[in-house]
Length: 264
Length: 261
Image 1: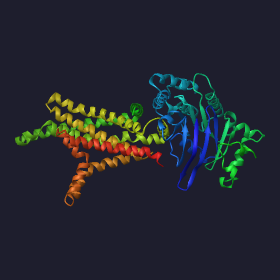
Image 2: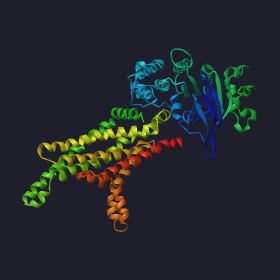
Image 3: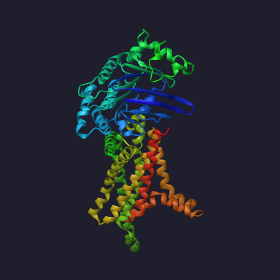
Image 4: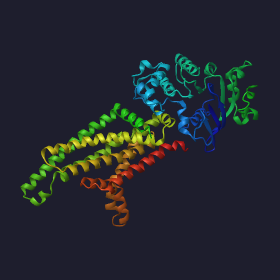
């Protein structure tokens, strides 16, 4: 569903993201980890077509993000780091606008908006002005905006940042539910970025860890933690040193054999 | 191009839930009223004086269109210069500061959908302002007999100059995330545009007449004045179309530039 091919983003001499490749299958939930400033947001912005990569490209739902941007963007639901909200609009009119620009046909729009509000538990605030909502609600409106057109691919940048424990639990439950098949809606493929390990433990089945712009781990969660090491330990081991100091086999994570570098 | 309406509709709705639109509309109505009353009072005063001094030759040249409606339109075009930047300053700058720029640019929209949509919203607002302006000369038809053609062509001038200001203000808004800066930049550009004929007449007319001609052509004032005299010339319409086109192209490039870096 998502195929990142050698994505790089350089600002002058600084490589924010350096040759990151991965491939994510339909229905997977992938935790995208890394310390602050590792390049998570930049990578996600490149996959959504917001930022142009210096090198490489991404194929989303079979469409190259640059050759066929409209089709690729239609397939993506994206929650940026800051939810992209218009504070003066009501929840309902905002979601209606998003559904329009994401190409939901007029006849289905009302239903799409109602369903998105229902799934994010926003129905009772549908007429409220977004600017008056609490942070947790705004985050949920951000999530509703990402799923309103029922896209096959969801890209969520720190979806639980700034929420209280109860809200975090609700959002996680919702994300987990989104990837379950059935319920008459498409099964979503999800990448979510976070630096909270417990979140990955709770909902992800696969982990991609990036550090200083390079991919250093790409493996199923089960394999990583099979020998009893915790995610925190794995995170610390791979991010405590500069990428340049890592062993070559550690630093160059091959998409073909992602499991190896998990072994100690 | 099919999303122009969605973008324009959202923009207008946001404009009308914010106090800015109402502030601008009220201020505009009050100013229009004040200018109109002053223009009428002045017109009457002058007529009386000329009769008093029996200056019938001069009196014959005085008509409602040239000496009242034209003056009024002229004042309103200057008022627009102050108010339109207030309407356009948020067009793009607010998208950047809200983070909604990221929503628009990752949606299946073309850049033209966004740029045209926003321009259409601003243009619709200017249409509303033009209708407000038109109401005042409309009153005169009840008391006198102004020329319909001249009155309408002047109003067309107000509309076109307003649309040009929207295109310029939109561009100013697209280059910054700060609305105050957007306001100031568009105001400075509009002021420059207004002062070009003065620069042409007093600065370069003697030394470089060709440059002076170019400056006069670039200023909106000359083309607006033509419309006030009732002359709807393709050359003047082409000027406004060109200015709008140039600034929409610049805006498109500026919005797109996030994708270049």
